[in-house]
Image (cartoon, rainbow, N blue to C red; front, side):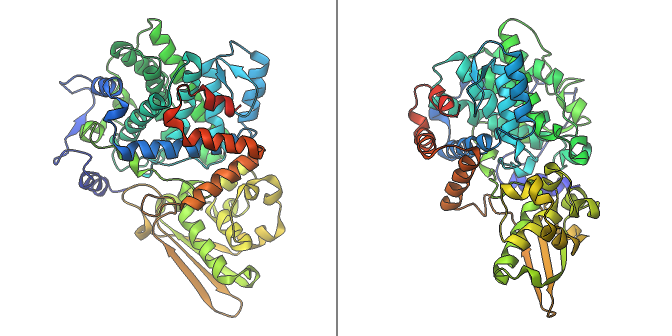
Length: 491
């Protein structure tokens, strides 16, 4: 569990909240519920009002999300939903990415969100333990297909604003505490509200109906973390459940269905029910419209849980130093902070020998064994064939893990990692990685971003001409008069 004081101090120094944070008790606020200023901000802000840095982040997120979603279109969870959609059918309002199928917008959003999250390759807002793209773009693009004539600039505006709200929600409830530690999958939980809000903006709901949409979505919000513990497929499906519910909430609100008005601060509202009444109004609303916390977005260089990436980076550095001589390794010790160690390194025997793709995605010993053996980490290393490889099992068997409180990240996101290997000749190689590659302070290079996108589209089976067309559309998204051109290219 992270130190709340350190987290708040870091957020304040970044200029997000007011100088003196006011801790609120849910249900006790005399001011209008916080959903009101958030809804007003979402409806009133124009493209021209947004800072260039926030828009640049959204463009990068869109580029990343398109690649990882198409790569995930045939993964477990996604393909079963698509098969069910083929059987059930419905009005063909929105594109189901990676297929010729069109379904009602909420059903398409469900499938597309699962695709985006399935490969553990989607973006991360570290301070809030949140994967924003999986709970915003699927709803946004499904609704854009449904209503028609949504321009690229309007899409970017809606997503940038809702990304800001989602990030604020993720850090305002029990600030500094990992949602997983208290039982929530934050991405799924926040996704109900984010999907409803982005759908409402693109459907041009007025403020009253937008608040109702948020209330309808919040009434359904859920997403416990038992799926992580059990390595269940429902972990990747949570954003789909949230996206479908959010789009449906906006559609219901448009038809006059009402939701609670005390969405966030009511006596039984969001913060009371999901965060024990503990939240910071300053982190939620401070400098709204001036500070955009989502600019601190991280992008994943490898398809595994973000908490494994400092360890993966350290192991890859050692593998490079060994120059392919991984067989000389006799012993491996991995040190992680308490959050990463308890979630991704224990119980050790299970983490050494994952039985499923999901178990492998959430295992630090597995990603380190792969990195030291093959000198790289990619899609193939999480497929069933890789899990049966004797050389990877042998490398994983040499691993020991240590919990080290000094390696925790007080600002949220992946903690530091130390990987130490002992060779057959007695030499010891050690690497200490402080920040995960892809974080704002250690960004992926332009070449790495391009390579990731190409790798995703190759994995999805897209021909070179289709890949080039997608790059052209994404590069010119601001100028699109209808983003249906983009979703059509994703079919």
